[in-house]
Length: 154
Image (cartoon, rainbow, N blue to C red; front, side):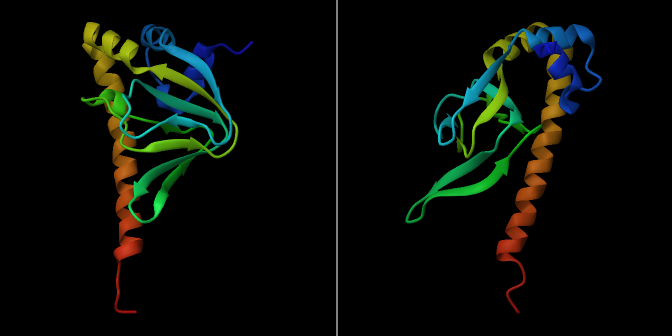
């Protein structure tokens, strides 16, 4: 039988994390589901969790005046969604909407922040792992901008 701990242990984000830390992280995890069209979070709301997507797709959207909601990225199975829980003031800067039924593991950011305050080694491990995700997302955004605003001499 699959447990939250075994699911997290097999996810690449937690690969190599010491068992004692994996147990602490699992204590902050819960299974969640969202219907298509339902929002996982909204721009401006407090960000107190992140998600490991197990099934389905989620669109990350921003509101553009005169255009409405614009999808800036989509995420699917196996991907991590959300790092605003880690950075004060802990607010979302996007909307995240399920474009199809989603099954995920939600990790409670308040719970994790408390455990990281108690054990800075755990905090450093999670920070390194999220820094890698943030770097990947910034690189992807830079490539998108080059695509949009690239060479106009053509």
